[in-house]
Amino acid sequence: MFNKKYPLLWYYLSLFTLENGLDLKQIRGIVRNALASKPALADEIEAAFADDTVHWRDTLCDPQLGEIYPTDSETSARAYAQQMLIVSENI
Image (cartoon, rainbow, N blue to C red; front, side, top):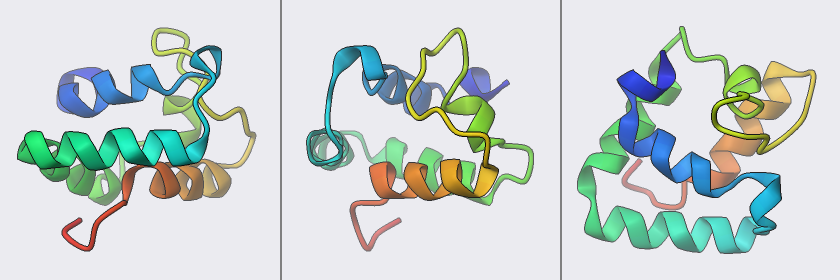
């Protein structure tokens, strides 16, 4: 389960649901600030993108998490996740 394997990343993703109304610029700002104070987040982001078992389409539309990016395409979901989460050359 994504939330057990990447708990810090799961927490931050939970903030980015459509219901919360944040735009991509705001999301990236939150991620940038989080990375500055929680270096473990960078490790989880890197690991999640390297993990072949992570399905970004399912993660970004997970009923427990909330809808972040509705799409039928894994490629589109992964690209959006990268836009949200990769805000530094360090990842």
